[in-house]
Length: 80
Length: 189
Image 1 (cartoon, rainbow over the protein chains, first blue to last red):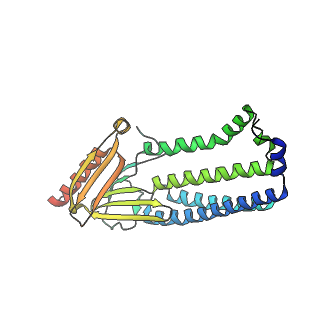
Image 2: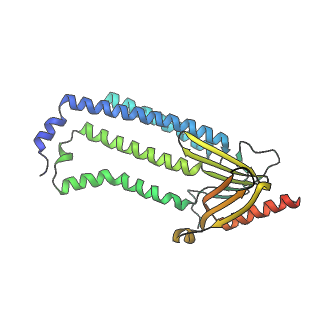
Image 3: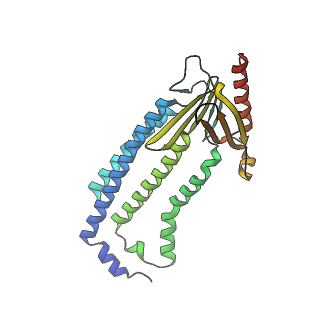
């Protein structure tokens, strides 16, 4: 065995470590939400530039995607 | 060979329009990169999507004891973060393919480039300014799936439009030549 299981479990179950992970997860989720918002803007701009066969579907999906990204922030904040 | 999930070749599409399109302007060809150009990032995404499972299996088989000692909240969070990053990678690649568009109309050639999430460029030249067009298909996969580049040289200042990895490049080059001839001759294409 390469990892001391008891030591690893003790470290990872430390409240400070758990809190650090939680903050890290929330930060990543916030960045992902920003990415989702940028994607919405970019898709809107591109579908105004070129009206394509699935432009409206992409717009709809991008909004759903941003909603899921927002939900992930709530998930990490509330349940982790 | 057609691949319906990634449509890349539209001949005289009726439902597609672009911003600077003139009232009497008709889209003759609407092109994207060939679907085969997506294979690389799709394979990478598929591999990355199963990587967490491979990691867990490796951990169990080699008895490393890492995942067993990981608290459920951390392991779940790590998996969610992993798939968030993966989905961002997939979305960015798909949008890059979807919005990199080449349009040939009866008046213009339009090159819409989606460089990244924060930048795009639109280059438009008149067909009458086209001086030459050259189709090239290089490589085994390009020969196999019939896709390649069309290089369009124009008389406009520093304007050269490259249609990269488009399906049926020979047909596209011929069509550009026909449309240009029609304009020069004053007839209809």
